Amino acid sequence: MKRYTKLYWLYAKNHFKVMMEYRMDFLIGVLSVFGQQFAALFFLSIVFQHIESLNGWGFYEILFIYGIAFLGRAVHHIFFDNLWTIGWQYIRTGNLDRILMRPESAVPNRRRTGSTRRVRSTLDWGERTMARLE
Amino acid sequence: MRLQKYVALAASQIKVDMAYTAWYWASMFSVTMRLFILYFFWQAVYENKTDVSGISLSMMLTYAVLATMLDQFRGGAGRELAHLIKHGGVAVELLRPYHLLDKLLAQDIGTKTSTFFRSTLPLLVIAMLFIGVDPPTSLESVFAFSISVILAILLATLIDLLVGVLSFYTVNVWGLSVLQEAVITIMSGAIIPLTLFPEWFQTISLYLPFASLVYVPVAIYTGGIDASSIWSSILIQLAWVVAFFLFVRLLFAYAVRKVTVFGG
Image (tube, rainbow over all chains, first blue to last red):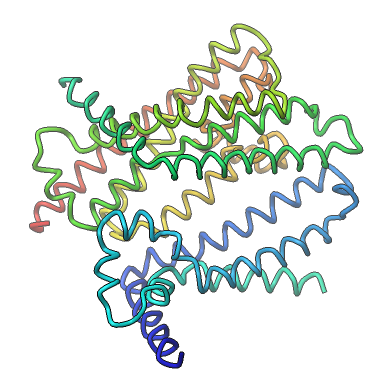
């Protein structure tokens, strides 16, 4: 287990380095994820400008639900975001064989070679939304 | 410009799409889910009111169904191009006897045609049975709607291509594509009609192309855009399509020259 943790950390660092290579793109991406969060909250606030309650839930209660849901999603993304790309990015292109040949098991490998991008921003935002409602 | 080769490319893309059936069912499932979520959402919103900002429940549901379906056509051409650029395949493609942009467009049309028959039509049937889609307001609006839809899909493809061409400069297109998705989702009216947004937002969206992507065609159908402004809205759409088409071509030509100079 400890070995996997170390490997995981190495992969994560490596991936960050890859992303920082394309610095401008990375920055745009992080800002855009924040933008997505803003857009979602903007959408909710607009809906609540027109109505008072949504099936018994008020604006802040809906925001709370959104915060919880997104927090869970963000944590999931940190660890498992890249698994779903196994289909088209690895099996289809033949890259999965390359990974299967490695001395470590394939799944923990896959988990980390992917996107940490969304992680920080969504995690921050989920927490921030929750905190704002305290 | 011989059209046959592009038709062949479109056809081959359709075959590629048909080969992955699990993908097809998965995407059908997810869009159906999205439709039903929107359905329940609007049911809850309209629980205590009969209309929101002048839009009735059935009109809103019709809007949601059509907007969700139109949103499926957002565009893969740019992603293809970005992939080619990032992995170097673009060098080979540029040597071939066709214009790369035309090839991408042809492939994209192929994908979208197959999407239309495989998923849009069945979804429309499901929506009509379970959610209830309003009939169009008039014959003229159906005609205008069809034209508007074609223009909207073209525009979406071109915007996507633009993002793809920009990846000549940023190599990794991830950030731009997230930005594109974020902006388009909220500003094209794919989630809620633009008329519900505050005044300042609507004024801004007048000057941006995104409203033409989803809001204009669907509003023509539901009558959100009244009869007098239908054709001017379509003209605006056409103008955006032409502008983006020219801009993408120019940017591409410039970028390609730059790439070749450096020995790409």
